[in-house]
Image (cartoon, rainbow, N blue to C red; front, side):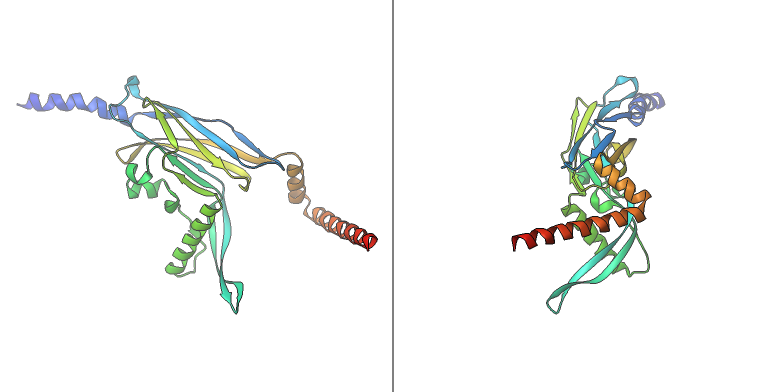
Length: 254
């Protein structure tokens, strides 16, 4: 009787180990994205392969989620209220860090492929982003401003989810397209790819993407950062020159 019980277990074990030992080989269509005066956004292609030990593809298809995350930054969110008929900043809340950009794509809705705990640990989904409040505020205020920040950046296109943004071919190859809007900040972005089996992450891989200004925009940004005083003087002088030119033109027409 013992042999009949042990043999099936020995036969099943390699299959379980094979899926747990799978790994991802990711790549991206562009390592550098340049922002110029005509930049209207870009589309980043994230693709790769799933390698299984022994080359055995599991009988059931695994799930893939791909995340593109921008550099974190401190920010202040202000809440406006209409007071005496005028919209004014009535309250504000500071966040120590928040992703400047966040997009996630998956082959199925995230709620169907990961449980709540796994989604929270790996920050899968806009609602699972771990924002760092500045502290000192009541919990209800923090929740209100967190919801406001997520809603604002979602409407700006800086936070996004695509439940059917990943295509998987033959259980081995995958690819996803993520839209990068024109107003994204510069910096180092990180792509995270997760292989998911029955709600659990069994493999992960990362790549970096550099978003930077190029051409005249880069010159202006570098000058403003390195020579702030002279940049300020030049900006004031240019404003005065434009104002004088406009006044002279209007005077001639009169």
